[in-house]
Image (cartoon, rainbow, N blue to C red; front, side):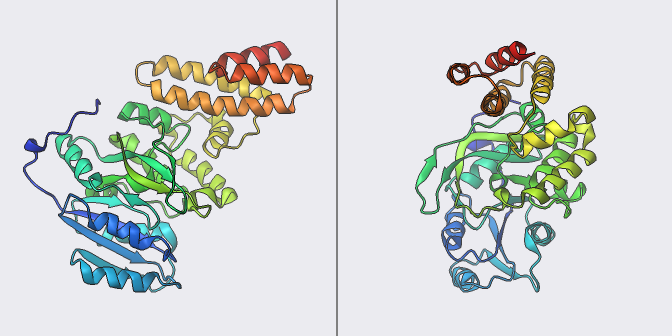
Length: 341
């Protein structure tokens, strides 16, 4: 599906959108996050703030914001449910036809919701819409303007084999669709979004908008970069549950390592990796331009590990590394491995 230019004149209604924003000890950033939703150009919003038993000043900040905007509704969990159960509670509580996700430390650009709703109304066959995003640090300084993401549903389906190509706090989806497939799986600790996207992709369509419409904050405490052992188990379970999405049992361990960015492939695994990639690129030649770049980046990083751990002399290692930087990672990898065989 091509990403079309928005046509405001074709939009005849403004459906209610519920923005689910879970909060836990987020006093440092939550006001800026909520205000970025309050100041959206799209006005028909329910702003659902779910306080998961915060013990800092989060609750007071939320109450203060509620006084400013009648669209805000605060729910306070009676006990700490953690993220996944809180998200499912938010979906059940949501009154909107569409649900948008938002995290308590990120910032949505003013036109984010408007552009996503416009796209969804113009493309009713799409179930979930993400966007590109920039990356900022804890102080709000920009680290990166945008990221490389697949845009079309076919590109996303391929990319889901190896990574999570949708920014969780950027998504807007149909409430009815997500409820019909069981919402978030509460066993999927730290990977609830990835597993849900697999289910959506296997039964519907996901699209990413190319424009950066959210500032994603990296500050060292993001859930997505902690709990690796637990996350590994969740990835394994996600693969088991979603074999119909293209996972092959032979490559299970490669899948897990790739998704978790574990850079410790053996030479044998890298050779399998190269063969696997060639097969996929033949099958998805027309839809995989963005995916190919992502795949090659992962592949190059793994090759660095092979070079580092090899018994070749320093000069050979340096030349291999230099060639790797000439944007020919796959060719260099295959040559290096074939030489050692």
